[in-house]
Image (tube, rainbow, N blue to C red; front, side, top):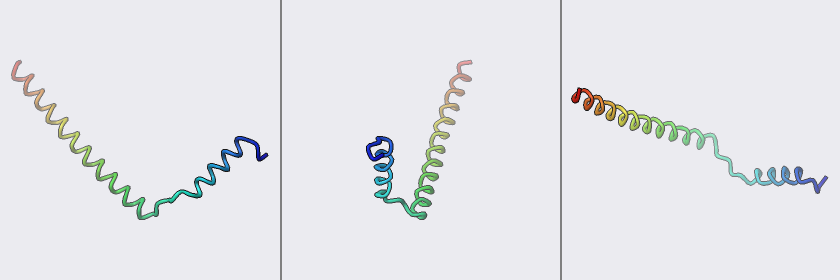
Length: 65
């Protein structure tokens, strides 16, 4: 069974997973907070641009009409 390509792949994958430096719980929590804050900032910027463009287009349309 050592020459089976599937078992060779799985054994190789398992050996590579043993080498991974997994983050600690504190690192995961900190990175999660960073992602959430960055997402909120991106949402705020996108919303502000959307509101500004909507207001501008409505102003132009109402002025011509």
